[in-house]
Length: 276
Length: 353
Image (cartoon, rainbow over all chains, first blue to last red; front, side, top):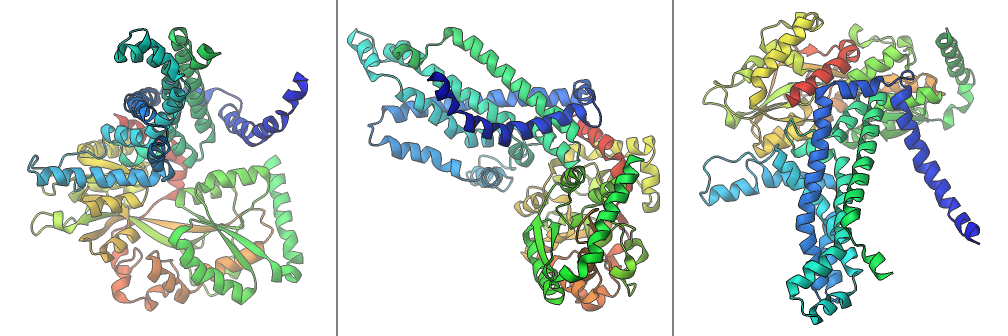
């Protein structure tokens, strides 16, 4: 019976293999088989300081963007959960609206906002706070602002989902037993919602690792992520090196996420386990 | 040896439909790999539709990017799904070096000899030209002065203001050498040496702190000029003509511009070689149609007699106009196809430094 159950998974697995795993495999194979079987592309990556610094930068930017999203997104989700259930869908809808706009459009919008003659500089100059326009575009700060704006809704939704899984009775029980509202939040709600927060952080981290449009458009010359390098290399028909970069990206993401899970897993309650 | 055999086979395969072609020509569709966008609309109106009317051969125009990778995949699979492709200089040089293009039968494509010798390539033609030029915001210039050369672009005392360059090693090294006083005729001889490359990068070091952005898409310099984000930048000439038409005070400096032909090639192993040749002939062989095209997109071909059919004022906005062509150089596609990889890596490191 169990085996028959698993058989129903087969079409999905086959589809995923044919449409995803096999093509990805072909691309990744380029890394070691182009032009002939060797690890030369990986040697090139690890031997040049420029690539390593891009790699470190990618990890750093992704972790920071995911961190900022967490700090901003968790309270937003908390606010939505605390609202009467009838109002929640509207608030979630408002959070999700930006997701339906193309990343390219939203990035260009940031160029209009942050430019030398843009909205922010215009307003500051009109108020007489600055004489010369500030350099906001083509900076690392602009990359952070644009990436956080693009990815924040995902964090809110992830945290929100985790929070709705928490039995409100648990917080009420804490209050009945004499905990202050803050203590009830800190000792009961926060630990139970942490899994959602970590999941949100991880999802945003993964997505950030692959970003390339935003740094290319609003970043400066040093704001290059691995994604940009892969685009460049594919553009120059260096599939082998692009494949090697993709493998580095994939492996490092998986390893880092496993590490996060391992560390956090020891200190974390899962709402699902608690309620089971 | 193996390659030779495969090539012979491919040539034989390509020749087959030639023999049988006449009977089926009425219901043939050829696939053209272009860039899409506004260019595709113009081509559809000026080339594709009239061509179908004249010959009965339908043209399927694709919007493509990253054509080298796509062609490589097609050649590996031995199945070109494109018949004719628009090619950038690097794409053309790569495809030519790798042998991915059919030889051009110039007696068929240009029987009247209207193409200049430098455009009659063994395996490609020149469909259009554009230039990477220096563009300046005239309202951001110091009183009574205008940039006229790359030396001016490098001169931040006389011409203060934020600048932008393309995020590409190609052309920027040439511009740096021109700014450093190298003559156009010596450009690629200097670049072919290690000292020449060092000299170009050293010159780029001088301008680096004043370059606020290294753009990667053609729309960016236009956006930055019109937003006032930069006062001086490299750009593609057609975009500046458009920007000027929109009323932004910008001007093109043709001197030192890098002419980059847009090549057209027929893919090795196509099943429609004859039709593809007809299409290429139709596209690049007629100065009147070529002039119509240039009027709409400002990317003129090299066909003789082109400027007889273009309004003189519009003609002066074009890279191959006799008044503009003098100080420009043609990008050496083969040099770049061979050296791109190593130099681009150095460029990447230079950017991060």
